[in-house]
Length: 266
Picture 1 (cartoon, rainbow, N blue to C red):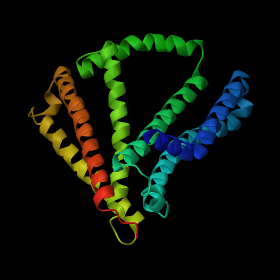
Picture 2: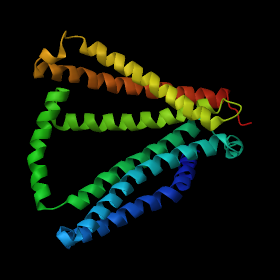
Picture 3: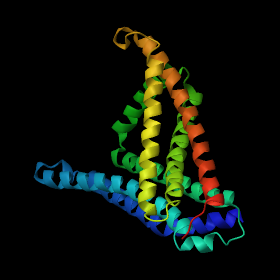
C-alpha cells in the first residue's frame, strides 16, 4: 500500500512540478544557445544581456520557491482540508501517509536542487570552466580537510549526507507546523504559520546559545589562531548535523502523534 501512496502523491505533485522544471530546462537550453552565438557580448545588446540574466535569476528563485510551496500546500490540502476525510478513510497507517508524503517531497527537493545546479553548470560550461574546476578540486579537498578534519571521498559523502539531512529537516519543520496549526478550531493556516515562526525562533535561540557555548572555549576569538578556529568548526559542524537529525526525529513523531491522536478536520 505504501507504494500506491507514493505513486498517488508523485502523480499529484508531478502535474505542477514536472512542467515547472521542464520550463527551467528549456530556458537553460535557449540561454546556452544565445550565449554560444556571442550576441550578448556585443555592447549594443547590453540591455538584452541584463534582461536575460535578470529573467533567468528570477526563474531559478521562483522554481525553488514554487516547488516548496506546492509541496506544503499539497500536504495541507490532502490531509487537513476536505480531502482529508477521504485520505483518512484509506486502509493505511499514519506512518505510511507521512512517509509517502515526506518521501515524495524529499525527492522533489533533490530534483529541484540538482536541476538548479545542472542549469547553472550548462550555462557556464566551456573549456575555461573545466580548467577552473580542475584547479579548484585540490583546493576544495584541502578546505574539506581543514574544516571537517577529513577529506577525499569521506568528506564528499559527509557533505552530501549533511545536505540530505538539512533538506529533510526543512520539510519536516513545515510538516509539524501544519500539524500543530490544524489543532486550532479556526484559522488553521494562520496557526501553522505561527507554529513555524515559533519553532524557528526556538531553534535559532538554541543554535545561538550552542555557538556561544562552543565559542567560549577561548576567552577572545579575535586572538586565537586559524588552527584553533578550524577546530571550532570541526566541532560545530558535526554537532549541527546531530542536532538536525534529532530535530527531524522530533518533528516526525510530533506530526505522527497529532495525525493519529489529535486529528481535527472540523
